[in-house]
Image 1 (tube, helix red, strand yellow):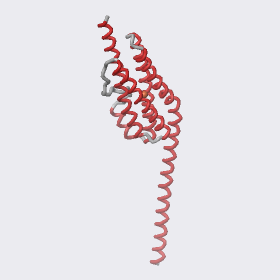
Image 2 (cartoon, helix red, strand yellow; image 1 turned 180 degrees about the vertical axis):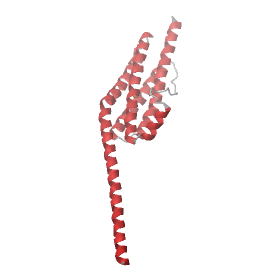
Image 3 (cartoon, protein in one colour; image 1 turned 90 degrees about the horizontal axis):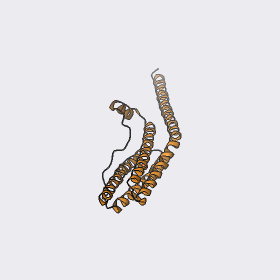
Image 4 (spheres, helix red, strand yellow; image 1 turned 180 degrees about the horizontal axis):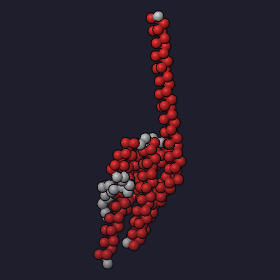
Length: 202
Ligand SMILES: [Fe+2]
């Protein structure tokens, strides 16, 4: 009986450390996203979820310690789709900052949904392992936060994408107008110089 109990605790600890390894990776990705994003609304949400993710790490560590384990410091691989090399180069080199932002927001959504799915599976596993209520509640709380952010992203990504694409178009028009003004100015200066030179020489 004791043997079975120990095995269940070991499996529970492995599962908790697996979740922690994904949260460790999520912190790194969120920090990177936060440093690259230029949309204030997205940045605000990313920063809030980064704080939540750090709390999730702490909650997991607390349960791992309580069960006599050692919290992992390694990072797991995040479930973000990896395009084939040829297309990846095309996407990375050929995209504007706005397009990149839209692309990464979609990856944010995929990641948050995947995290919620992993917690859901983890909760089911812990119930089968007859884990303590406190540990199960911890996973439920983390899952709720992942779902909350995933739902926000799914709902708001299309609106933000529209705004970013509109801004990109406006920036492009402004750039073209400035270029046109400069060309016209240069042409006017050339005409004035030519007229002056012709008048002086004749
Ligand atoms: Fe998350």
